[in-house]
Length: 334
Figure (cartoon, rainbow, N blue to C red):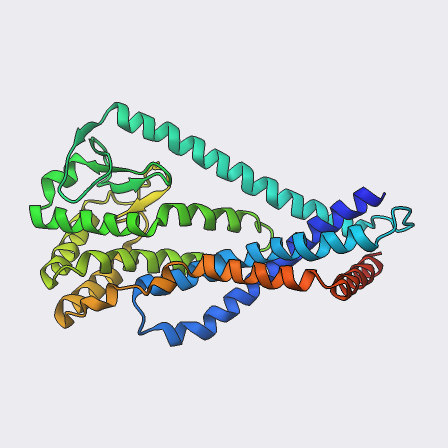
């Protein structure tokens, strides 16, 4: 019963702490959003990503450095406490959430790999100025121009797009994808999806995920527009052309990736075009800059919390207090 009770406590705490931390992160963004309106889109995206990803990371750190050591140190192995139905239910939900996240991640990775292989098999390798990853031209009914893959990204462009865009528009579109590559947005998108799937019964954090995705697109637009006002206008023109090429009431079976224009981003495209026109008219190219600290905000905040948690956990009184909280939680759930 000692081992089973400990496992159930860890799983239940993971669910509750993750959900609670995500709620706090969402509340923090509501407070920070008005204050960050003057920031670049990349800085806002970094803040959003850090808020979203640090929540489950902090929950895991608390469990690893506080809950588990306190339980192992102060819970007698001959405990008479049992796993109640409420505690078991929380543990099962938590375990199901983790299993669901793993399953969705593996399934998405397999589907992406299979479709990417299919695309590469029927594709023609091409070289484009400014692109230092493998690039392929494919025949596809959708006007695809996308970076696919997190660790080994590849750029795929539909032949209709190559024929339709001018040389300047294509260069601006490529610069947009380079912005996603520089920010490692595909990897971030995968991590955010794992976090969301691990809370599939607790729909917290979806707003942050959606706002991050929109902001990341704006950041990639700013990256492309930072070269010159003309680049911003060319990218806006490319967005208009590609949006007009989208099939009506149709969806593409495409892997997760960073797309210049997604199949369900009609409203988002209008907002991006307006923003690009604003950038072209104001010539505020410095907006695309991102402070070095912001680029590593997630790592800095995680390491900082880790050191604080480790320092706190070294105090025996803290572990005793945590164990007292565990005892009260078990009694409440009985």
